Image (cartoon, rainbow, N blue to C red; front, side, top):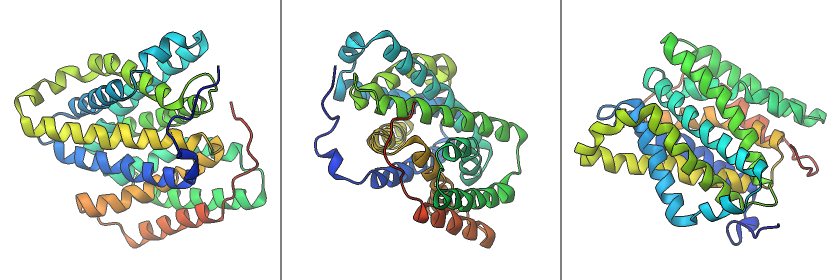
Length: 292
């Protein structure tokens, strides 16, 4: 069954702009989450983030109707994405509690290189990937230091982030399920999983109105706005192109780290950001084809 577009007039906006919006919120929310760690443990912040997003999507989309209509394969897809959301966000918050935000962002891009390389079939796009990888490599080489536990969780988050791209891209291209309903279903299914992992860590927040308010803000900024933008971008970008654009995330994290957390980059890191932007600028989207 073919479904209607998720959001009216969404197709009139360039998909790259949706990605930029997602990139900004992808680390803007976590930057504020770092400040929230003084009140709530990292796994508790992860629970607040997903619980808030699940509540917003439940009220906005009422996606359980779509789940009942979905076939078995689609149901498995959204369940898998829900589990990835829960575990990925848990690893991410433990990592940024122990490492600079830019370090986690640089590591996050590493497994995504393979997804980007798979679709780089022209010399121009190979060069674009080379520039982007060089920039992220410099950021990683400069910053890959610090707490070993934080690094381990950052790499686990990176692998799960690559898996998120694969699963979310399939939902965005699934003709039998509205892409935003698919995202909403995955977030609702993530809630019981994150409750098992970190629900106990969020208990203290219920006695702290400031923590609750901040947690709500982090949830909307981190798990509603960027993931909706991702779906709108993935619907019109090939998976390899989207994966290349993920190289902007370390650059975005560097800027947000400066503005919010006063984490000042070095000259080498600033040059690395310029390389990433150059790679994105010369890349060209290939002729559209459906990627599994």
